[in-house]
Length: 440
Image (cartoon, rainbow, N blue to C red; front, top):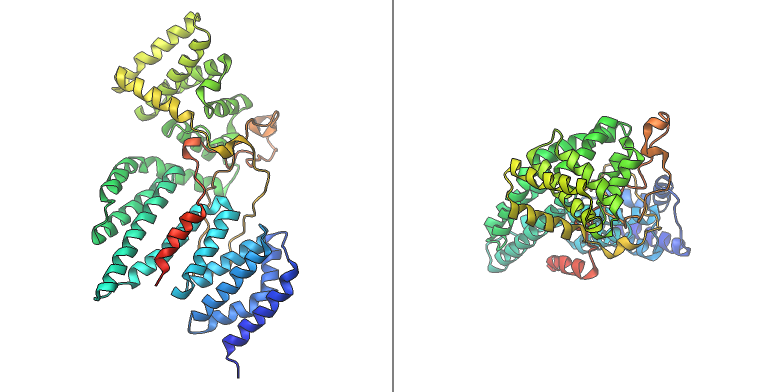
């Protein structure tokens, strides 16, 4: 007599064979319907049993089916998500769950950081449950702790790149606490990172507040303006806020943001002069001392570029001198301003290879699924995709006042990011190393 679990999994195997011809979904609703038709009974069945071992078995089947489809459609994404969800309920399914995370990170790159966060949940389970008095248990507990600390620092770095400073502080603080327990060699590095990111917490709170406001009302111009100003002035990041600035900025202002993300040497005289004047004007405005220094550094760099092309412009020479003298008001001496200018030039030259051509392959973004155990929460920030070389020739949405009823389309800029903050793709070697912790 076959057990209930065996009967359910046998039914699933038959369904997988029926799907061998390839089934894809055009949207999230259709994906959920197909999943419910094919796997719903088994999925609900394993979740009603006391043991979670059957969850892990079904997770492996779903992973295999998702890989078999080899697609990027919502159904494939949903299969991987369910595979992670079920596999993460039992230690025997942790490797399967991590395989699902790896596949999701590959087909939906913008969710890569979210996948690392889900992996961290598995690491923390291993760390908590590996305590023991035997030498082997102690060694495993320490190894899990070291790996957990390392992953927390990696995720905190990702959060910092995305300007999610509050999350970064929380992760680094926790990593430091665990690191002390397992005598991590990274304690000094973690302390340095904390000291660097903590002062950004104030800006982080403002960004979080304005982001929530814009999520509630995508047409909230005040929230969009706040976000654009915070990124441009306080963080010296003019590319990332394009997705917000497009709501409130004119076409000319959007051009400035586009040029400000390019290497300095690639700018012509007109572009350099416009940027220099714009940043010098921002530095003279009602901004913090930190933001003013950022703006003065930018103004200096662009005046230098302009004067290298137009060395006889007396007006520009005078303005450049004024900018250099303005550093003193913020207690920045000459050598320091020289160093800051060189650093800014160098960092503007950072370009990722993928930024050289646009990515035309759309990636599905599933809607939140029903609340089931455990329910990995999606992250809203996007993982960078290649930055377009030029903005649209005409975009009525860059000047909302020209048509008050025009719905603003932010999609063109939503994944733009500065080269220095671009996230590297996690390769197979990375995931192989991360999975080694599950060799029980």
